[in-house]
Image (tube, rainbow, N blue to C red; front, side, top):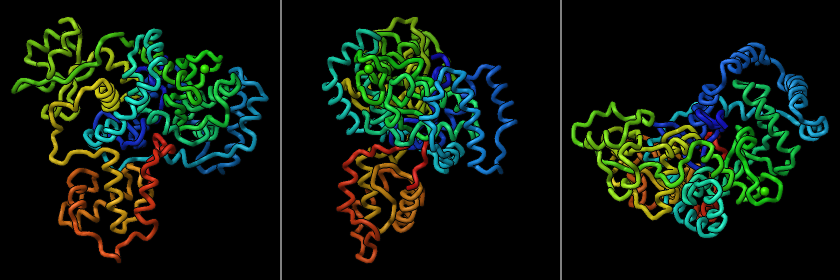
Length: 479
Ligand SMILES: [Ca+2]
């Protein structure tokens, strides 16, 4: 699994339900996240592969060529690749019969976000009361399975469940695009065709080996699928058959998915019983240039520099020679963390520090810890998903058509926020923060003329209570 994303990862799409943060890079609002991951993917290619990739790009399908003709020609090339790698002609024919390209995935590949999400917004939505409560319910429901997983792989239940919660919202958000279609399209058009060809062929092998039913091979636009949102190649390297039925099914089997997550982390260097890290306080006049996940120093040096754990009990499990990096996700005036080897293991899952921090913090919250001690350096904190849905409902009640009330703040929600900010005499930012939420809560009820043109808010509230299973990691929201 050493090729997974940056260090190890293999995924090109992100976690559930949040836009990409401005720092560290990740998620879910696909776009920036996806691009970062693609960049990361390229970084891990061997020089030979990279050369192959470049040569392939030179001969890539001309953009002007008719998509259908180009696709048919490309598919015949993919067929040769697939058969050379052990896919039977029958599997190939069955999987690609009537297949047509889905050019929307190429748009997603090239999508450039117009809005940077601050890390406090990102974390507020990924580690909110809902996800903590559901995670605790999952810890209880899958207690025996998680205990067996910990015995086999040495990864604690809270970490495994936190990855699950961030990756697929505990199995509620897999993405709904057929992998074969997306990956065949990405193999034939756009950038990174060489990478996606490998993922396409591997997908056919997963089908051929019977691990996951073909009709259940749905995922993000880039091909991440199942509870763990593994790319097909990551699946091949790291997925396990934990329930013992002979299939590695990270879509249909929670034990397989959770076991696969733990196996992934173990292969990424997880050290059993060690913490990922903990929040610290910096001394006055601290040299922030010492920060960096990779700039590791012994704990004793950090102590000598005046860096102190916020809770000393959590720091006492590591020896003074244990090596830690200092993470300052929002600069020296925000929360600070010392992070150890296990943080790197989580990071490898998705190659973004903000992502790893979300999982690490969610795991701590599942263990009963509270929020970070230091506030984020903002006077307008981020919103939970429930608060985002409330904000969207308030916007709809004022006549804005923002699409579905799903807690995902996309372009249409931001446009509506901008309009309301202007109306209320605030500087228009388009950001879903506490200030605009509180302003709209206390603003006078909208005039009847401004009633929603589409669905009444009362009808929509039913929608908002249902977790949205269709989030596309990597897909820009249209709202
Ligand atoms: Ca199984």
